[in-house]
Image: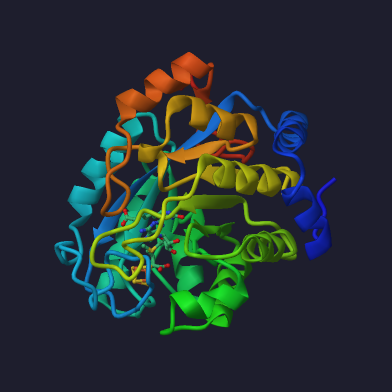
Length: 330
Ligand code: SAM
Ligand code: DTB
Ligand code: SF4
């Protein structure tokens, strides 16, 4: 049963269970609700890099921090198509285009994004965008262009948010998610572990996601990648046990959501990642780069899948547009 009426106390009780009981229960729920041998593969592409006016304390793309990230203006549509093809050839079913923007503006760059969305959608890939805040009209335009998902992370709990970002409010984030929902886009929203938050903050974040009127279709769980020059550069890396608790709890409270083991995989061994898949993670970002930081390459991940008996999920699974393996060529 899908519940959206979880209390914080219930989620805290789940989160604090003995670790192996938690993983066992999450694995059971995962097997009862999803094809556990399937992992959805997304690839990221940074269509506009760096120079962002926001002050997100974790982010290498904020203009105010000296992180060595090269500012790059909008990519060309042809470049994005080539990157999408490479991602598809590597096994990805989804391309997520990220822009270092505070918000979407109605200008030529947005028109270019709409063109990119159209082009990638016609390649039988799920298209996702993460462009910062947007209004309902903009969300509708993206939907009309063929956008499948919008990513907009809540990052952490409402209480901890103001320690991490001062240039926008938590409510602004929620409003954008609502706009994406209203426009019939699927929602991808999650957060980061390792921002100096307490366990209560982590539980608060999961509570907010699990009590949305409709659960996000995807929930990325990122481990902070501490980047030199950002205020969080010296933050201690999160342990596998913390990631595991987050993933397992997310799986239990949102049984059918795609839970993505996101940033931070480069630091994780295969046995560690295997535990996360066991506990209900069923998506990754693949390809040797996230937005600006490195990630395991396609070949490494394919070897891991082979070893663990996992397979890549087809694009548009469960929708009318499901992409079949044997396509009839005319
Ligand atoms: N500018 C848009 C926004 O903020 O929504 C889109 C791009 S932004 C880079 C997308 C997400 O990446 C952030 O919400 C955050 O969760 C994640 N992120 C950024 N830097 C990260 C880091 N160093 N480690 C882990 N996740 C990070
Ligand atoms: C998400 O939750 N994680 C991705 C994607 N959504 C946009 C971004 C991770 C970024 C890690 C830091 C970087 O590479 O710049
Ligand atoms: Fe800008 Fe997004 Fe980075 Fe925040 S997370 S600084 S909004 S690119």
